[in-house]
Image (cartoon, rainbow, N blue to C red; front, side, top):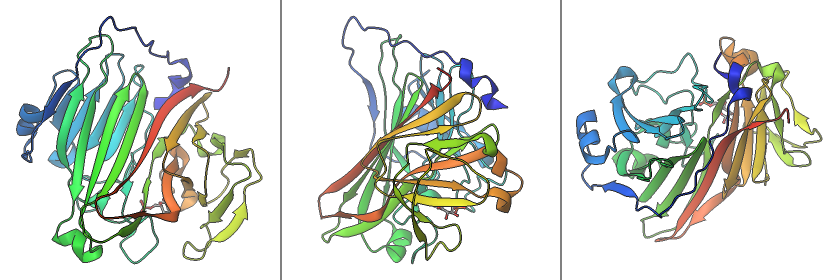
Length: 329
Ligand SMILES: O=P(O)(O)OC[C@H]1O[C@@H](O)[C@H](O)[C@@H](O)[C@@H]1O
């Protein structure tokens, strides 16, 4: 059980730098195809490396000098692993996940873009079932304080234009700062007409047991309860300090605060500190997914209540930083 020792995890001390080091930056405009090409063009040994993941699908691995790590499939730009220096895995990938590109990866941090759903398009849009291209990798060369990061991009294609008739560039940067994971999404309108979209980072977090999980920070908020009918959600007000799980849960909290926590049942919580996202989705399928509902809870940063509108040449961006906190103190 990955989380069993989480509460004992030591925080990585940020050590002072004697000099302000320049970043090692690898930027190439060519789209690399194989793992070997990717390592040649963007790899930074020990910090940013590429490997073949499940079904031979390319994965970028970020490693921080403190011992934390993260992995992201280029398919869907889906972060599937974020580990603490202790080796504890924080994210959850469902047992029914497949990596052969026949469907989006079920777990980790899939994208929902340009539609959170339900809506006219396929559920959660197309960004999670397309290959993203690497644009930049970087790492601080100071051996005591390496902050590895990778940036990937997605632009329109015949496939996306059929579903959503706009030219766009989505830029997604994933980085490790000590034990923390930061994910930043920027959507640029490269068309000559404005567009609207909804989006989310559909973050699956491992819990010890769903009945022990608690989400805090959402009391007093209006939420859309999609549990009975996702297309006609009930509008409710959250009166609980701690949201617990005893049945199917699918709630979109509107205008949520920038700091939300999920207690995972071990004495640890995962804190999500965001800006730009505005809404928070809490989802657990309960017994509709008998094999796995006990082991995860989704806490998703979303832009849903009010769609983002982006004028030509303009952009929209949002960031979330995930960190592990000890709630026993
Ligand atoms: O199984 P999927 O397509 O990844 O979606 C799972 C769930 O994702 C959540 O974000 C939605 O609020 C739910 O309504 C949905 O059922």
